[in-house]
Length: 99
Image (cartoon, rainbow, N blue to C red; front, side, top):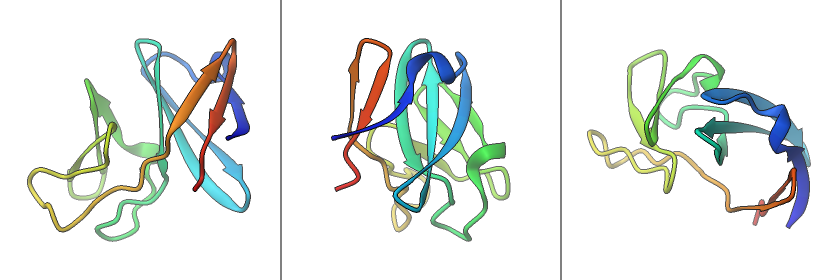
């Protein structure tokens, strides 16, 4: 796992894109739970920086596809999966496995 960001950098119910090893990774904070995912919708590549975050999913701003923040699955369109990344929190540090 490599250091990626600080928990304090990701606002509650907010998002932040951080480039790590040449990849844009979208970090999401929901009530203190931090998630990380690719920043492009797997459907048509729309950036997810403008996506709606609710409960445990993120909804693409272009077509509304909803992806689980836990495993990237899309219930309505199972052929599309958002890549998510395992995280570990150590104090204020967010460590990520880009595997």
